[in-house]
Image 1: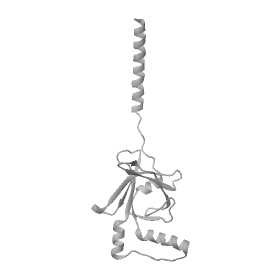
Image 2: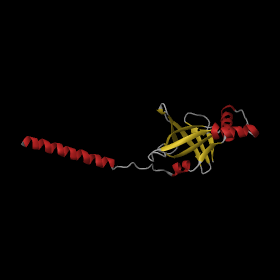
Image 3: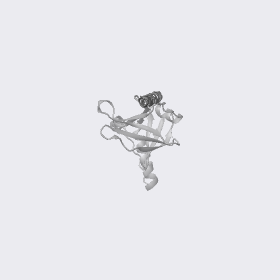
Length: 172
C-alpha cells in the first residue's frame, strides 16, 4: 500500500508541475514590433513609383557609364498609362500578428491591379529594407534586400541589392 501511495504522490506532483508550467507559458504575450523613426517614416505613406524619375535614374546611370546622354520623359497618354501601371508599396504592421511587419506591392490600379503580399524588416543599421514575399503555395520566398538611398517625408528611393538603377517613389 505504501508503494501505491508513493507512486500516486509522484504522479500527482508531476501533474501539478505540468499544469503550472503550462499556465506560465500561456501567460506570455508576444510584444509588438518596436518601430524606429525610419520604420515609422516608411509606414506613414503609401509609396507610388514615379516612372519619370525612375527612367531618369536609369538614363543617368547609362550616361555615367557610357557617356551617352538620353533625356526620356513619359508625357501625355503614355505618361498617364505608365503612372496607372506603376507600383504602389505599402509598409505596415501585420493585421493578424502585431509581432510582424507586412507589406503589399500593388501594380496598377482598380480591378486591373495585381497585388503581392509579404513581410518586411530593416537591416540592423537601418540602411536597407528586406522584403520577404509570400506565396500561397510555396510559403515565404527568399528575401530581397533594397538599399534605402533616400527617405524623406515625400520621397523614397530604393535600390535592389546587386541592381544598378534605383526606383524612385513619392508619397501618395
